[in-house]
Amino acid sequence: MLRFLKFSLIWLIILAVFLELANALFLHVLLPGQRGYFRSSSQALPHHWLVEEFPGTEITIRQGRRVTPQPQGRSQRIAFLGDSITFGNGLPNGLTLPSLTAGEQSRFHADNYGVTGYSLVDYVQVAKRLPQDRYRYAVVTLTPNDAYPASPFFYALLVKPDERITLYESYQPGLAGWVKSALTQYLPIGYAAMVIGRSVYQRLTSSGQGAVAESGGGAGEIAPQYCYDEMAALAQSHLREHVAQQQIYANPGVRQRYVQWLMRLRDALRARGAEPVVILNYSFHQLERGAEPYRKFVQDLLGQAGVAYLDLYEQHRQNRRQCGYFVDPGHPGEAQNRFVAKELSAWLLQRESARAAGR
Figure 1 (cartoon, rainbow, N blue to C red):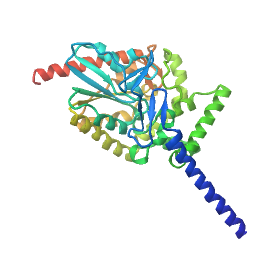
Figure 2 (cartoon, helix red, strand yellow):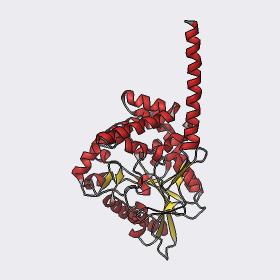
Figure 3 (spheres, rainbow, N blue to C red):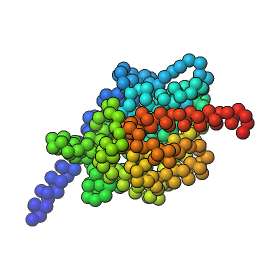
Figure 4 (cartoon, helix red, strand yellow):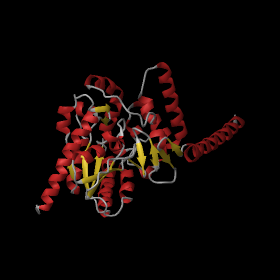
């Protein structure tokens, strides 16, 4: 019996060493590098970013940012910070929120610093690198998934505990959520293998999209223009995410860390000479089922921080049945971006008029 225990212990040690080496190989050698228009590194912050140049026809990257119109004769600039909402997942260059805002008024240039998969922690790093005094405003699109990394190509597995607010997997109900959370934290290569395996299985059985979205597959594709009934059917696969996000923002620990990072973002933007302005973005499920506790929490926090924000929740609820209002349950479509660009442009110009009048 003792011999068996010793033998088992030796094999457990060998297995632990093998898994540790496999994790290191995956995180520091196999995962980093360039995929599509992303580059990544286990050492840099943020851990992934856009390549300097990507000459696509629908998605074009120049100087590390997605292109926006640059008309002549404008004296001021706006920087847009955010994740895939700002970047414009599923939309061509001209239909992103920064591009449409640039076309909606004639005073401001608009530069798109949005990167798919970024979280609130990453926005702080972007803010610190903005050119000094170049931007009059920095428009940040806050979304319900800003509290956790949700990056394409498993880049979220590069994020260390002190570089995130929380983990999405920790709020998924049942055994699946527990397993995902444990693998994410202690065995990233196992998590990647599990998601890839499930994705392959679902593709073979033609039964799902969830694993593809979770692994970041499909990033960069231009989406079709869904109408309401089609989007409502598609949204069923995202219901679990909506439930998890409700739990995330009811957690006092998450709320406390969120406050700390949002304050850091505000201070970083002001230190670069840009006045922060926040747009609250909502998923299809939030417009259908309600946005609390997320909405009130963020509103209260922004009010306490003295940060101006634009909340179009009620208007979005009225508009949500328009065709093209979403490209998928979590990302706005052309119709929504046009509406927000119009409202944001009018709001910013009104603020500038008030400032000029000394009010």
